[in-house]
Length: 198
Image 1 (spheres, rainbow, N blue to C red):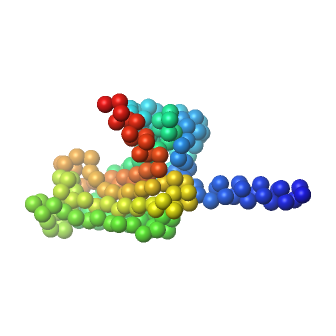
Image 2 (image 1 turned 90 degrees about the vertical axis):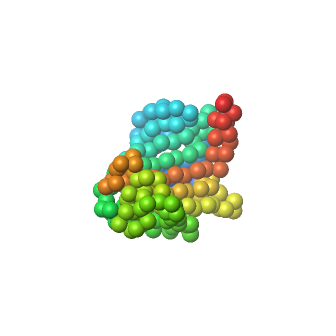
Image 3 (image 1 turned 180 degrees about the vertical axis):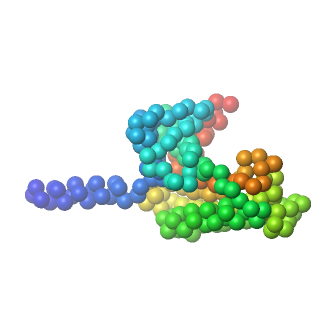
């Protein structure tokens, strides 16, 4: 009997750890639990449920992390921002870093929809102006995953994952950063609660 109980306990613990949340963070975590995932460092309040954190399980490309945490919902949204990446006019280096992130994300979350488009009225249509069009907001370079309801539990409540590229300002055409965002199923209520105060 004791052996059966031990096996059951082991299997239960294994089932809880099948999905590791992004950067070691899980849906519904409290501020205290997030602090624990950050090696005991308290999240730094920004505004409107947003906190700046530095998780222990961080990615070498990303240097800034923001989480949305409410009293009612706990953790409901995560955003990571990379260091700035030096790039040529064609955006070669940024595209390479972006592609490196796509592979592990696709292995984990499956197929994605990629968007690489430029506004028809942009003056920067040619490939040699890739960074210029990005800086001026006329180019969109992103990838998106939508998790089906059947897979919510499998991915710890994640519903959306997005990856994209931006520059810090319209005049910066030689450096860009990559952002990644994770939305959990409780994000709808979390953002609705924010809107209710307006």
